[in-house]
Image (cartoon, rainbow, N blue to C red; front, side, top):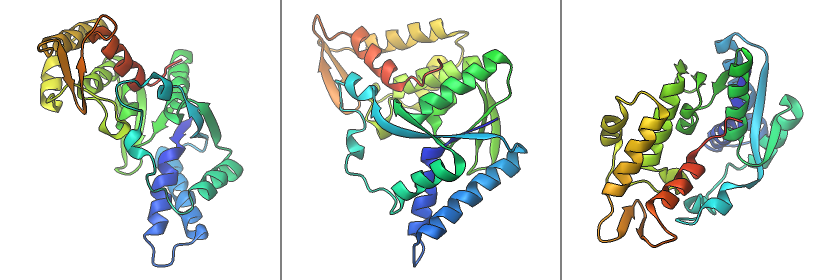
Length: 241
């Protein structure tokens, strides 16, 4: 079963149509159809499920450090954004996910399939989904790869260190990919990664303040390294069940 990130398809195909000299809805729909056909052909599987993010997102209430996806507010969408979502729903029976993101539904379904011994492959180009174990397919680069349980946790804790600029989730100030890799590369399980990441955050505290990407926090009885980490983890974590 192919599990498809429909949000990515809407944006890529929609903006692709907008680049045409005479953009039209039919051309945008053609982009969607050809993309899905290409995915199905590449993966040799005619069974697929497409997920789209709907209304509401529990992460919006969790975010106190920086408003969740603040920088995306008012961001430009493809001209035929709503029409392409409707097209995916009517023609391809895409499922609208409310209260959380399509990423969460993809993660839940892939992990459920792994537990039940069913074959699935997650189709997206979103790096956030690399914390989900199992098979993945990058349909833009035409790359199929497998993420182990340990690699999934390592990708997650790497994000906890770095944060996510696209979603306005802060990480540690001046911690880059190279340092995150060095800190986590030899970890043998999730618990060891958690200890190292927590210790790295605590070592970054200076004069009772913790500097993050985009915000500096003064630590108090209520605002602690642990509470900050809890928020960052909760925002970054893609659901598995």
